[in-house]
Image (cartoon, rainbow, N blue to C red; front, side, top):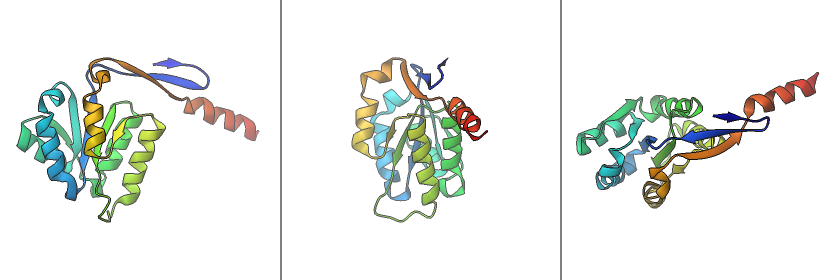
Length: 159
């Protein structure tokens, strides 16, 4: 990680840390997608929320580290891992036609992915584009705002 006053350069390694999340109405689609992309996914570290992680492992044999289910804080756990630099991108098959009781958690996860410039696929087409990208084979450097510097500047401005 490189630092400057305004920006920090982060590096996504060759082996990616991928979070897999699916709302109930999209779990079968996620399972099909993971089964179809099993060879590529096997090369990376996988994690996911509760039931989704368990179902992927059962269906595909891929090892997926499971966190809590979304409504029980799993989305927030994954968001925290993004902040810690431990998740490189997110595949989140969201069901736009069904109200989610934990919608604020979902929005917080999407926001933190944007803040940390983490690629996030919210449907199968975008997941297909990401997983087949030539960037999946290489390291990738991206820049995010240096929030520590930004906060320090705001504090200085309050004095």
